[in-house]
Amino acid sequence: MENGRSSPGYKEEAVESKCQSVDSEIDLLAFYEDRAGRLVVDPQEARIEFGDAVASKLKLSKDGTKVLWPQPSDDPEDPQNWSNLRKTVQLIIITLAAITPDFDSGVGIAAIFALAKQYGTTTGVINNLTSNWSIFLLGWGGIFAVMLMRRYGRLPVLFWSQVLALGFLVGCTFAPNLKTFAAMRCLTAFFATCPQVTGLYVVTDMYPFHLQARKLNVWTMGFIISAFLSPFAFGFLVARANWRWTYGVASIYGAVVVSLIMFFGEETLYDRSFKPVPPRPTAGVRYRTETLLGLTGLKMARYRPSVVSGLVSHLNVLWRPHLLGVLLFEAFVFGFAIGINVTMAVFLGTPPPVGFGWSQYATAAGYATPIALLIGEITGRYANDWIQGWSIRRNKGVFEAESRLWACYIAIPLYICGFIVLGASLQNHLSAGALVMGWGIAEVAVMVNTVAVYAYCNDCFPKNHGEVSSLVNLMRTLGGFAVAYFQVPWAEKHGALQVFGCEAAIVAGLFLLIVPALQLKGRYLRVRDHDVQSDLGANHGPLGAFLDLNVAYFMMYLYLIMFMLFVSRVRDGCSGESISSRRTDPLWGIPA
Image 1 (cartoon, rainbow, N blue to C red):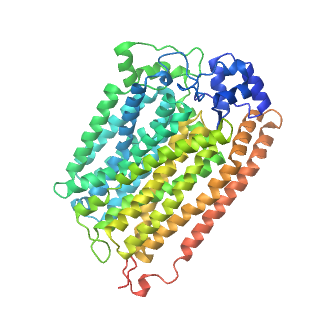
Image 2 (cartoon, rainbow, N blue to C red):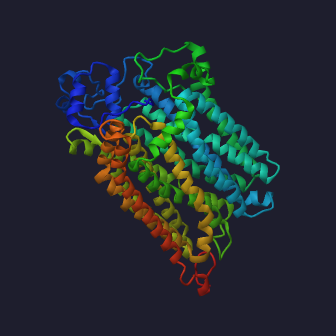
């Protein structure tokens, strides 16, 4: 799936002619990858588009209503052919592992006041030095992990990354000073992030197209819910015990995850792009041991892309406007949500009139938003399934990737509502119920929107699952990294309602600018993108083809830059008469 095969484009006659001459599985794989974002799902439509010769060879779902993409091989070791139980075990393991990075990062949120007391500093210093930089490194660690997984496999990289993360987390537990603690926490984040990019690989390795969004919903819920689990659970622990126990318990969870990977994890990378598929170098217990440790990956590396090519492939994917636009959108959607999670402990624990003055127990209970994420998982599961089925029926048996983005129309109104309610609750000291409802509604929106973005990007780039996953992970963490720096000072000067209201407005503006444009022109961008790949050095020459495509790209980027400048201008112009100048509370804007 990660080879450098070029695409012939989307010209219908050429594709039909090509498919009618296909006699091998490798050609069906090429067709699946080349037709990125457009798949014939209905068997009857497949007969019309491909002809009986090809359609009769297509493998269907058990109920016979959907064409399987990618087409499974006849090899029982092909992950697409594994039993449902075997697949479910791997999905559970990768979901539990995906909890680890943000779970470990969130431990510091629960213990932020205790850490400030221990190291003789302020909560702001703890956030800026440890929380923010650990979030920043979560994104870059994912890119490094994908570069290795492309060559050596999913399982060994997952295993060793979690072993290293566990070691550094133990270092956090016993850190004697703030510098050591900050270094250990940042290194933990860098290595622990691997499952947050491996999940997309595992899901697409095992499940056919029509089930992928449903399974992505489960995996995505794991790493979104994890950011709230540790502040929720360990907030109660910090109130009764030393903060080091929170990192000790997190280390125990990390050890459990490492044990599950060691004893039950399996390699899902299957080199289906080669014919014949390279045989396993060993078998039995020896194969399992060598695969876990990475020895099998070293032996199979000669068939796979180099580590350095993994960096090039990220850059090759990133510049595509139908990806870059939605990545920018997701960066703000998820980034502002991370900012809430990082700063809310400060907002809730600071004494009145600045904050709510909640006790450690009450602050911990305030992080009970996992309930909202469960609602988001259920909503996203059925919404994505319904949208997928509706799109296939509407297009007469053909699925177009842009239909995934309809879920964003569900998410963004909820996002705006949640942020406004949350900002009003903080500024006006409304009831705890109002605060939790606003926060919970916002998290439901984040859950639904994130699954839609992952599914859309995955459908558009079937040859680059890892690159897509790591880039989404990078953008969401870069967005969250910056928020904690300005959210509290901004609220101190102008009130929380303005802060969260402006954040909701930015997200709404990006939504209106990007999502409808992708739904209208996304297919054109995908088709033109593939045409340029095949035209390079052919009809127009490399420079001509590149410039031909990038006229549209340049205009899209120009609009994005203009929008960001507008947002910056609005932000700077919001000062006016500050709330504090009207003799109000310095943090929330309440009349003094």
